Image (cartoon, rainbow, N blue to C red; front, side, top):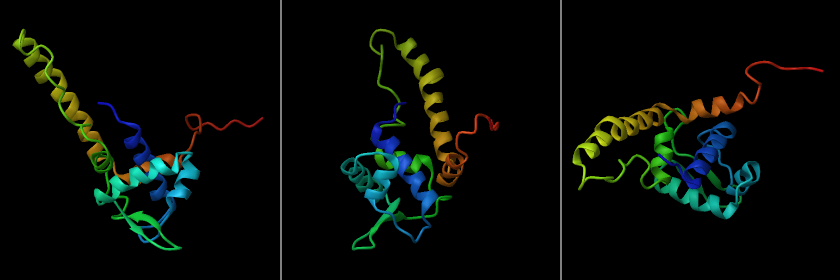
Length: 148
């Protein structure tokens, strides 16, 4: 499994939206770009995919921007990646199918398919709200705060 920069940026942008807006509030791509340090032009492409995936809605005008289509508890990491990635949960292509079908079957049955299913399950069980909450915890060095 490999997540492209589009998928990673989509996850980061959606986490930021979950932290800083309610379902009815909107935030501009420029604001997200500045807060995350990601190219505005690239983020516009990402938001086009998120809009097609029905995860965000856009509002035009001076007070326009993007808002979450559903609550952050109803959107999963799998939803976000499915909207932005083309083949994240696909099973790998054949390796040695023609010369060693037994090895090929073993790779798929014992390794590739179970690993793919495990990754998919983790992403499907992870709501955006939990990611946003985890991000707010910050870097506390495993719960210890040092004062000098």
